[in-house]
Amino acid sequence: MKRRSAPPLSAPALTAARTAERERGGNVTDQLACKVMGWRLAPDRYIKPNRSWEPRWRFRPLERMADANRLLEQTVPQEYAMGASKNGGFWARVRIAGVTGEARESSQARALTLAIARAIGIDVEEK
Image (cartoon, rainbow, N blue to C red; front, side):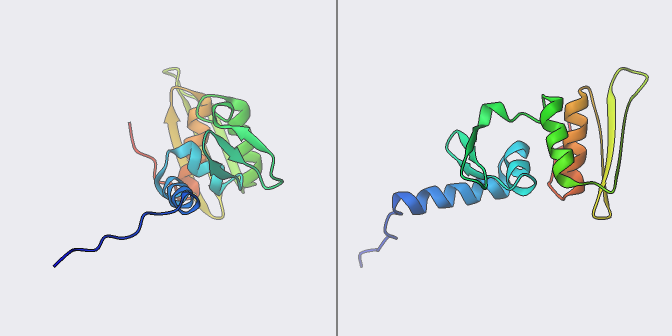
């Protein structure tokens, strides 16, 4: 008996499937762009709600404090605190909708971004 395989996905369906997969399990930056900023993923860019777009390389909240602050402003936290530790690292604590996320990192932007991610339920792998 000949085995039937599923028909190949069309280009739009394949793109939609890949986008859904990246939004669910992609990197932290992509998940934050979708969940917090309300952007959609496209190849090499984020599509904003007003249909304008931003290149992926430009939005780097783990590296740039300005982008981490954009995330913080968009989440409208109930409270947040940041500081430096004695060993030269940084810490951040953010409470969003009653859930607290904390992070200690060598970079201030990274600490704030990971604290936000944890507060909104994104699984962030430990170092």
